[in-house]
Image 1 (cartoon, helix red, strand yellow):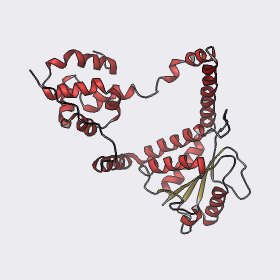
Image 2 (cartoon, one colour):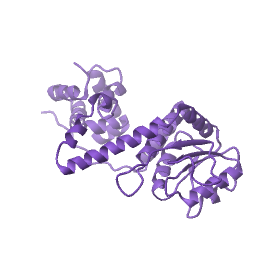
Image 3 (cartoon, helix red, strand yellow):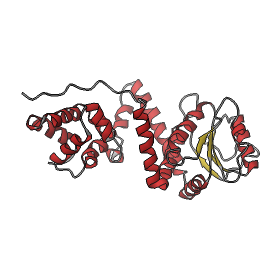
Image 4 (cartoon, helix red, strand yellow):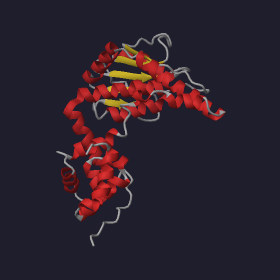
Length: 299
């Protein structure tokens, strides 16, 4: 039996009647929820099913896998885009030759692809290495942005602090980022995000941080923003949009690449922090959970 997610669910359908009741419940859940099963840790899946984690381990062994992770891997792989480049652009060509609404969707989709591709092409490995060194060697790494760009800063700080506990979103309260940089010094760094029209608050924060001796990592759409803005590392991103505001998908792609490097650099310690955060969220009921499916009774 090959181990694609579809083949595994087909096998589960064919053999579910021969399984003990606990394995039946697990098999039924996987058949009904392959996407959630591919994403969730073993404890979360077990909780949703209403069985112990050991039941999922036994089901994996029954299907010939050495571990639960090996069993879950095909379901996870089905959700990612590792093979997207092999699928070509036929879908886009089809849109471009369809009705007017589909043609518009093709234009928007093509623009997003171009924005991400250009932003990543401009992301030189030497600059990435330098930025990661600044972040990982810093006591605190402040992240700041305003208005639409704030969403990018929030996501990066929310996720990145699991890779490096010193990452902090500023301002922390209603005020300016400079308030939180008063005691910052050369042991710290600042990541600033701003695109045209440039945020006065962000520019002032960069200038103030530079005076305090912080290393500056700037993500923007231009190398020249304002006098006194002289970053140590600059990631220039494309923001070309087919609507009235800047497109931020290129900046998001750059930030996600930085996160990947930070988690790589964090190694086992970062992985443990992710597990600890996840456990704390589960234990405090942070995530919505559906009602447990009814247990299957054997006749």
